Image (cartoon, rainbow, N blue to C red; front, top):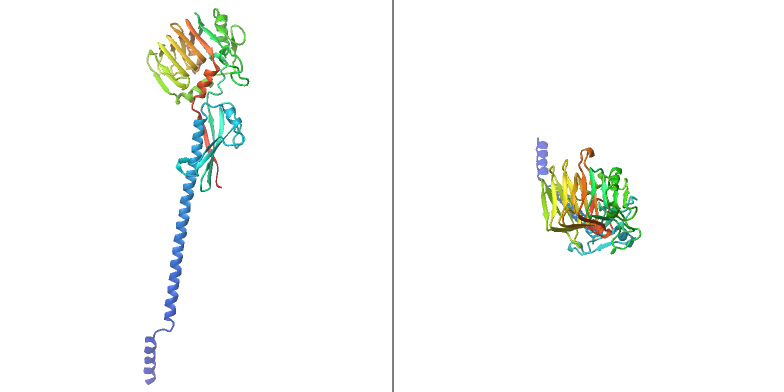
Length: 405
């Protein structure tokens, strides 16, 4: 019994005595907690740092791509009215445009190169050009954007002062009207360009129209220029109705002014549309059957005049009074010239294109009547001034590289 009591007493005393290593355990747990907390803090700092770097890189990338796109837009404006061949020849192997401190950010800028060949080896001539805009960022980020620009009328083959495209129900010349394809005395022939030589007075792509003009009374005196007398050429492959209409469609929404003709007759007179220093695009769209546009009074302009008919038949245009135009006149659809020069003195310096673009030519009533005192004089300078003034079309662009320098 005494042994049992002794064991119980010893057990109680042992149980109430603190462990010898309790302090070590507390220290160990505290160190582990400190290590864990330090790890969490370091992880948080690292995540924050990485996040800040990501945000910075995204900001640098955004600023770089904005700068590269700004270079494309700069080129789009600067190339307007420029000779693409001249620009490319003068800037081989060197930037054409250099801009620093873009958008008030020191060191942020872009360089623009021009070429007739893109990075894939595609080569273009005439109405298209490639540009490559490379941004320069003070943090070293770079973006490179390639784009193709196009002037839809730059390659339009104007080989005569008057161009008939498609079928016509009637072509008639009378009175004192004249058509001349020779270069004006104040224009110098430029070898290798559109102004290299005199043009014919009239070109047609239909044998029926060619024969009808040949039978016109006194055409030898009225239609002059390079070639035979009368100066008329049959050029079936130069222009097609679809080609002319496609070119017109591409510039309709870029017009400086547009008029909708949805009733029988609309008179326009005593107005000026564009100047030599600021040629413009003026568009008349006929939308109703038997629509008629009549130009009266002192009407003049520089640039491109488009008369685009959406009617099924009998669209008509009359040039009366003292109408003068310097540049290019494009008449498409089913709206022929009914009268030209019947009153006053009409004068066109540049060229005129009449294209019957109706879906079913057998249903057309597309005709041209030139009478009275009217003259059409070919002018390479007037045509070039009108075409080169057009805003360029951005056909497309894409990023071709993205890296840090």
